[in-house]
Image (cartoon, rainbow, N blue to C red):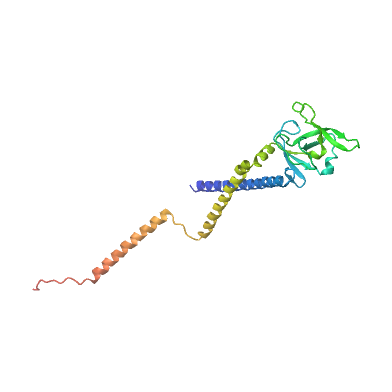
Length: 255
């Protein structure tokens, strides 16, 4: 019986440790996602950027097998001069060509979303300076013809070969208010409430550590002893009364 109780206790302890590890890993993940979300909001072009790296979601299979739809690309964010120094063969991420160019990039929408394709030709102006790039996806079954020329000002980043498979679509969902609420906010609230519960339970356990816990068997034994003591006391009182009572006199005359 004691071995079974020990096994159950060890199992509960192991389960608690695993649960805590999972919860803290989730908290770390939530922090990363939150940082990316705020980085995207603070970035002028709306692209999550941290320490010179930008994080982009692949929206189609036009570059398969180099990377696929739903992958997360970790690309190098390019400065102004770097955007005009790219070469044939580089994989670049850029805004759609139908955006207005008034000295700055204003943003993108579903129709002119960010694309990531390979440069197949560099177009120069009359002075020999880079004017634009012609790109095309590696998957020629999807990207049948080259893309329209992309002005170098629209280039965002250069792909350096780092990606996380399947994470891009999930992060896109998390960047939406509904996704962020369901996947991040609500679990974090539940985690916080759980930690408060554990803290209160631990605090009460420490507070009551010196107090003896009376089991049901102990309680029955105490009741039994109390009854025995009561009966002994009653017997003692009865004996005392009998001792104090005067002896009975014989009224019959003596011969």
